[in-house]
Image (tube, rainbow, N blue to C red; front, side, top):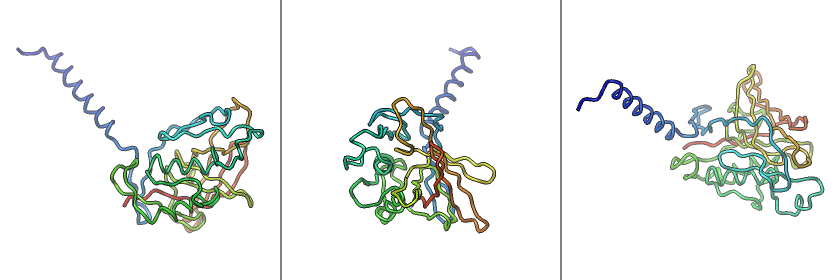
Length: 241
């Protein structure tokens, strides 16, 4: 039996639609970027949250590649300083490495506070190769780049440490990057990045402006939700081997 032309066209359109859907489903959530003599795993930028809602201790504030960031509660919350490290900035980074990249990082290994953690995880885990995470069976490792010295830019998915005076500093993950007037503007995925807020307070993601000097070396300034500005100490990129 011969099908009418309109039926044939409908079948062809359906087949094309299925092929496109299959290609989209199989598209990896990252690209391999060859720069600085290395192949970096750069995650696909996710939609930047316009705002987020603060909550009680342990309430979900944000999520990135399946990893959730939690509210650190209010200043009077006793669990903020119970020694567990729950919902501090460092806890999020360890969890991100485990859940997204299958790197078995965790609190309690002495890898540093926020200001040191980007370097600490690279020193501890960058001497090994890891598979089974977002990059699948392709082996990856971690490599640290100090701000003001490196010619290699941070990638989406990089772990970035910040200096905050003489204190423990801060650490976060780059969830999106865009170019703006020669600079790279990064939106952060972070935990406990702002001040202590009351429940239902609207908060905003931290932003980093990365720039190059005349020699091509990258540095950056972090602007917090509450308007404070702090320098980038360095970042750790994911490297494909």
